[in-house]
Image (cartoon, rainbow, N blue to C red; front, side, top):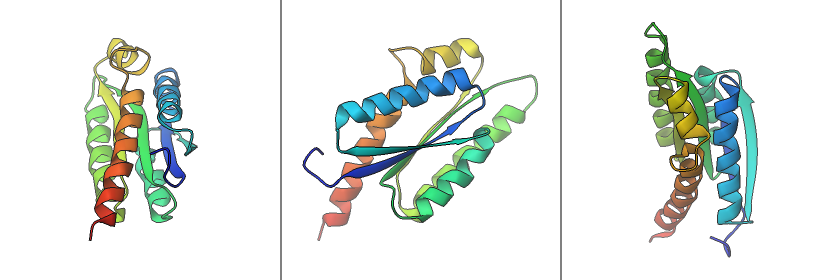
Length: 150
């Protein structure tokens, strides 16, 4: 990817459960910078996971972003609220990606507890922010190849 045009990535991150989301965001940014110094990274923060799809949709509609990474952490509680938000976010992000033909990497995590969040957001073995960055970079390559086919 180094010799190609400058790519622009957007990270849309929830401010809720900030400690964990910052871990995802920091690792995603670090990984994108390690992959290529030709990447521009925009960070957009929204109040919570439920607000992520609206910001993603707005970005996708601008046609200036090569890929969008959605980052958030939803911790299950005693009610179905977390599952409802997780399902709504998942459906919305997929719909936006398909509608706008922009890769949207979904790492809005629905976890059982803070231990799972810590492992996936702050750990080094299973860091979903790092994985999201790799997936976003690869999808930019794939989409470029598909669009350049004759």
